[in-house]
Image 1 (cartoon, rainbow, N blue to C red):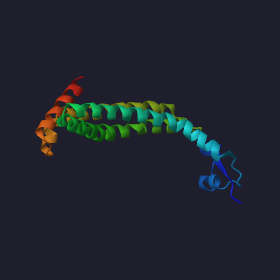
Image 2: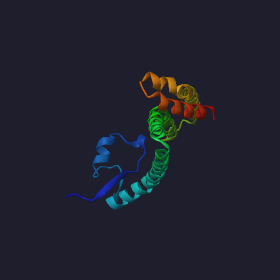
Image 3: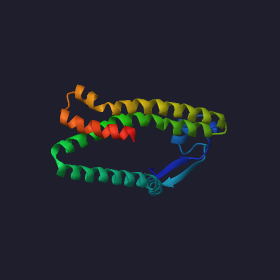
Image 4: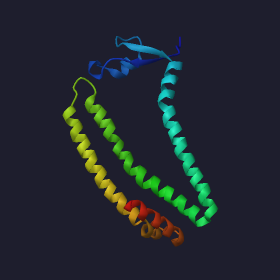
Length: 171
């Protein structure tokens, strides 16, 4: 008989001996709290909705910016597209690695063997990593014009992009 329940494990990690078997089998001795699929969807939506709305607002501002730039001329619209792609590549790829800070900090503070001393070490290493990445990214963005020219981009467009990034880095 198939049930419409989702099971949430309520025991801490250190008391589990065989977590794969115990979390997949509701008949075991590990206390699993059943929740309905409706409740699971409600919890998911409560967490995901703010993220989704924030991303939609951010995307809509980029869309409006592109529409406004399209009224200036096609070179500024093309430069805007190149700036967006460059930002997504450089900034997103480098900042994504900093998300591990939260994961490692949460891991250090979870369970019965909390390691508060490790949190300072993790945050210190993350800060140093962020500074190095910030310096490298600033250099890449400041010299975006010659770098993009080496990749064969139109010089008119790279001039606009270079001006934008030089002002961005200095500010």
